[in-house]
Image 1 (cartoon, rainbow, N blue to C red):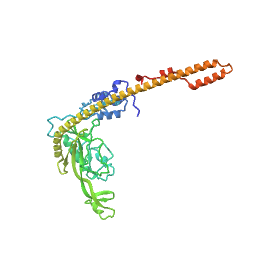
Image 2: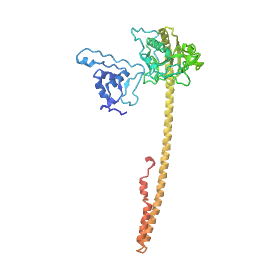
Image 3: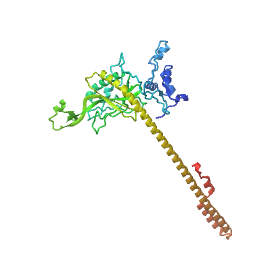
Length: 423
């Protein structure tokens, strides 16, 4: 991909803060701002959305020109894990996010009343169609092609229940001001396995999203996975699928000659919510079973209170992991420094050895050159003492000998010689 032409101002090549983007958006149209950075207005609009920077709605500048009143929303504070700069040319690490820190000692322990909310949580909206666009799975669990989805391990028969359950639980967590979202790109958050809760066939990989679903308690991220628990069933093979023997379809084909029964691990219809530490180098997880008959808001509030306590521990684990990683980094840098020093010594020794070897070859060549020059001089003297009729033949042979020996100048060889410092 060709890199677009850069703006003339070198300042515009530096990372651009959210504050600068906000001021630009409310001072001139997006089309003009896009031209400054060599991008389209639609691309720039996506950058504004990604950094959560408000921009004027369509028709705003027409209202300004007509002298009508307009509204400019304030720039919201960056949420935990979100980018605070846009690096137009990817120079260095310009993407920054607030670092994880321990939540306040007095975490919210009572739900906050929310006057209005959407019917479905934002990260659940539209997920059903993507989950149904799935690969074939003998384990019974959906394996959708889309990889940026809410983190759920679920069968098709329980999909509607799982989506409703996740939406209600997430809303309940947010009543405690715990923000639930798909993990932001800048943060290096890792998904925890849930194979011990939902065991697919060992020869078929289970689905997992590219970015985990997280809940932020203060500025601490905790990963969340809604899992339909697995259970061992007596199952019958029917038309390429294993179905519990109690299923009407299995009973219908009970007498077929091409079916058989076996024990299979299949989705059970029971759910749990797994929480885990998504930070590299940490290892912590817990889960809560979610009975389908339970008031989801009530259990969500209980989980929210538990997360207040867990977040402190996760923060401590991350802090310890960062110290361990820093120690490893310093040890690695010291090892690399020592390696480079050793390589420099070896390189210097090799340069000195090669330089000396080449110089000895030049001296040997110089000795050979002197022998050749003495030989030619002696022959020339001898030829002058021969009879005139023999001299032309001898001189011709001497010239052929000179051509055969070539240029044997030691001075030329010395001029091409490289000293140790030049190597």
